[in-house]
Length: 422
Image (cartoon, rainbow, N blue to C red; front, side, top):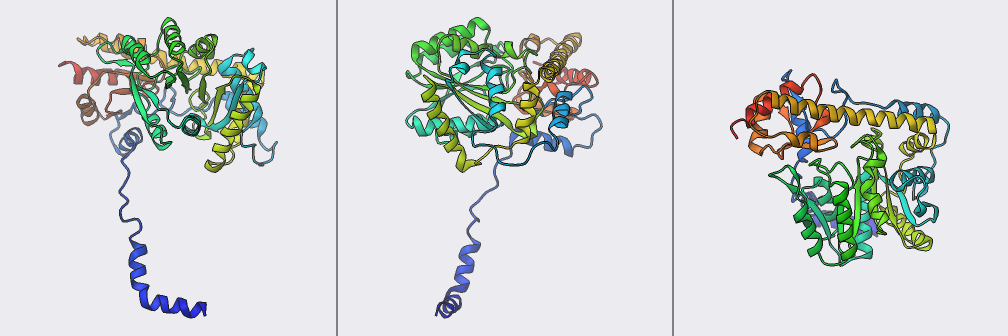
């Protein structure tokens, strides 16, 4: 009977059904290209032998080649074949999370000893931010998030797709190429009490502009007055200055002032584990009982997303940070990466000044981290690409990782040519 009914349906309406199903996805338009990934695609398609890519957000050595740290290779050697491929717990590697918390909160943190931090392994920093955004939506459904202008573009996508309303606050001052501190403080004061703010812990992306220690103290004070919640996105700890302790100063200031913060950490940049997607989301709680509850809810949010985080990258991190000799090697190597970036900043500035550029370039060396917010206009960036085969995003963000001793002179000359008229 069922077969007969199916046969009749196909005879009577088969054509219509075929048309209907074929039309399911006709309304889907191509998504806009990611502005950063689009730069790399254009660079790869360029046949010019003098082409330069200063758009990529990944570390390169002085030959422009990707780097795998020696400490990572040694950690991989130690773990190869030694463990099975079973699932990690939903919260991830306990050892990796423990070592990661020490890095952010301090080796002897009382918060860690008192078990007041809820923390789970995440899919790098992006996953940590998304998990927090979903947590915010579920447990503070009427709240919104304040995001700096500018910020890493994906921050907007993350909170948008978590259905959290967004507001912005002043951060960058285009005229000085520095921090618009007065406007930032005004926005913090004027935001409704108890607002959520996204802050970059160090090496602000894309500007490379960080508050000073005194400014962080004032920001923390104003957050305390208003009862705001700070989520720190810390993607560059150690990579910014070469000193993980120094790069965590903003977080430590907030902790000293008694804030219950959130922190999104990543090992993409500071260990070069871009493709391993190793990160951590942590949240300071009132007591151990609350931390247990919060962690359970973070795990429940992760369950329908990806169930369990991957194991290999977590093993690399826990092996490096859990071994005194490997950790010492990592600290040496991450400082080496930071020092190369700092050296390229100095070289680029000196080259521009030696060319007689009428513009001030102090901001190149005042900014910190992987990116330099050059101040070039989109039209000037277009000229760099079209005339000199130099690729970067149209907001003028230069990835200093793409600058080498071999191309810094060429890059400086090109920047001078497109900016010397004003």
